[in-house]
Length: 356
Ligand SMILES: [Zn+2]
Image (tube, rainbow, N blue to C red):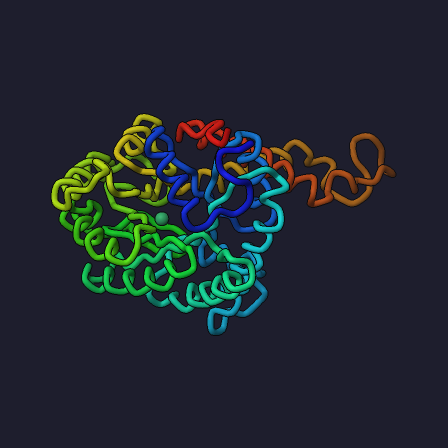
C-alpha cells in the first residue's frame, strides 16, 4: 500500500502531501516537462524512488507539447498542448505507480487566457470525473503592484477552490531568465520578499481557501550562472513564517507552504535550509535540460562513425546504421541521464521512499 494514492492528486490530497513534506522535512521536485519523453522519465523516476512528484508545464512547454508548428492564435496551441500533456500524465501515472501533482508554471497577466482555457477544461473534468484535469496552477503577477497581484489571485482562488484545485502565487521576483521571461536586470531589493507582503497575501487568500502556496523571492534566480551579487537568503522564509504565525496566531508555527523557484545550481545545504523553513516544492528546469542533453550529446559523440550515413560504418561499408540513428535510441539516452539528474534532485530534497 502506498501512503498517497497513485495517479494524479487533487483537492485535500495535495494539502496532505504538502503537510507530510513539511512535517518530515522534505520537498517535492517540480519538474518542467516538454514532451512525452520527459514526462515518462519523470514518472519512471518517481515510481522507482517511491516518492511524490510535481509535473509542471510552462506556457512554452505547453506550446512545444502541442507542436511548434501549431499556431498559437488566441492561446489555442498552449491550451491544447496543456490539455494533451495533462491527459498523457493522467493516462499513465497510476500504471507507473507514481503519485503526481499536475501543475502549470509561471503565468503572467497577458497569458491568463491560457490558464482560463485549462480551468474550463478542469471544470468539465470535475463534472465528469469528480476531479479536475490539473491539480494546481501558478499565477505570477509579481511584477505588478502587490494589491493588483493579490486581488487577481483571490479571484482565481475562488474559482479554483470550487473544483478542488490549488493556486500558487508569487511575491517578489525570481531573478534570471526562463522560458522567455527575462528578469536578469531587476533591482536587487525586488529579489527579496518582505514578511509584511507574505502576511498580506496570507490574510486575503485564507479568507477564500487554504489551498494555496506562495513562491517567495529570497535571492533565487532562474537558470545557472557564475556566482554573482545576489545572495540566496532562505532565512527570509523563516522570518515570514514567524511573522504570519504571530500576527494571525495560527495553530501551525509554519503556516505557509513555500515554493522555491530557481533552484537549479543551489547547494544541498541551501536547499535543506529552505526546506526546514517550510519550502515544500522546488522548481527544477535548467539542471534537467542539461541532464537530458548530456545523454544525447554523449551518444552522438561516441557514435559519430555510425551516424554519417544510413549505410556504412567502421564494421563495413554495407552495414546499415538504422539501429544507431533511430530517434528512440538517442532520446532514451537523454531520458537516462535526465533520470540520473532527477534522482539527485529527489535525494537533495530528502524525498526518497516517502510514499510507503
Ligand atoms: Zn519560476
